[in-house]
Length: 65
Length: 537
Image (cartoon, rainbow over all chains, first blue to last red; front, side):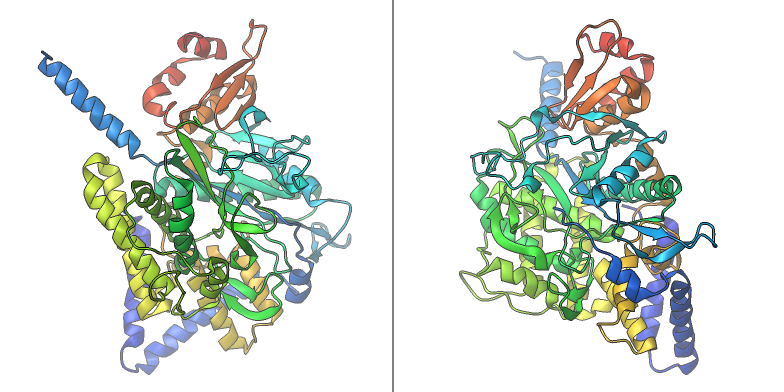
């Protein structure tokens, strides 16, 4: 079954990165990867609930199945 | 002597029967985690505080608001649930426990006035055990299971948004299975089996599959132990909550093999296997492999073709062993023979599925053959990757994606596993609101592979699958919803003008009521009166 073309392109890009990641040290490229992870984490930091400790502590559920 | 035409007819009929016998009906039901933030300080209109509050709003009431908020929309119609055929106390082993002896949590067939909506896609949205639950329509292939499972997330995202508006409190819904404080809520798969399959065989041959499949189906969890008493990460949300090998319960003393026998179909021919060990997955590939591999393994077990004796010595402990083993290489001890790892066991099942497929491929539809080969190939790739480099699956499996994200945070911020921020990331990965969902953040950054598009999910939110009775159920909700008084998986009850009694239409066969069978009729009928005339009733 066909994945959407867009996701295949993304997947291929992701695969390429992994292969390159294993290639001999390329400092410039390594820095690029680090900055990509950093920008993802920055993006996530912006949407994370504020005050993690209080938020997590107060998330209490009744049991279910 | 039979004419050629007769022979053709009978050949076509027997191939149709074969294809039908080889069709597997299944579905996924998910209880969502739910909370409302306390209203924010009045100085900042629309602001919410950063914490949930224990207050007047009981989670059951809150869940009720959420379901009603969605039900009030065009995509759903409030309708009663027809409990006539529900028997949650019946045990697949052949006896019924008395209602007096049952724990109140086991009584799911009493309607306490809680909201209950049958959706135009054939799903059921309702309140179960203080959680809003989405039960997908019946489907016959793994990709449809993914579409309708993701449609459930979209339903919940809309429901949360509307409930937030109507309550003036930010309502959060999470597609996860634990609060990390001892409570767990389920994601259950349902597979229709032949009544003739000895149940004992399911227990002895399916248990090791459920134990070992966590390496593929796990959603990942921060915290080890039911109350996360030990800091750390584990593969599965649910593993720590299983305490028995076989049983009827789902809310306490949870068993790996659940014996609830409520087929929602002809009970003389079918039983429904209610699989309660699974995690709520966000990754489309995790869900696809979860139901795709389980459905194939059940075919093998029904055919009696597994061969290998895979009975585990202590399956309950093995559930935890597999879930806590991030290197995926701990040995599991069998009652007979040498120990095997979870990956070894999965290889045994995959091999048996491939062999069974070779034998029955001729009796499958072309679509089913293509999907089967796709499932086997992805399954094999995952097992190979888990042996070689776990992180190569970070764009496919939930637990690996989550672990990679958490490790990035640990590295950048120097966090230990007890850091609240990591528990928050675990929780927020599963937030159904696309603006807050961390799974969604990975997806939009091209870090997760997909199998379906947002357009397909939106279509699945509104329209039923073509090839099961859910088609009839969904279409009548869409066209004649105001005339539907109640419905269940295997019936719809109509109020037909000029008829003194309510009209109950049984839908006992999950493969009747498909688009091919009733699509044109439903298209042509403009009223429920016309529908009943067309049905000859």
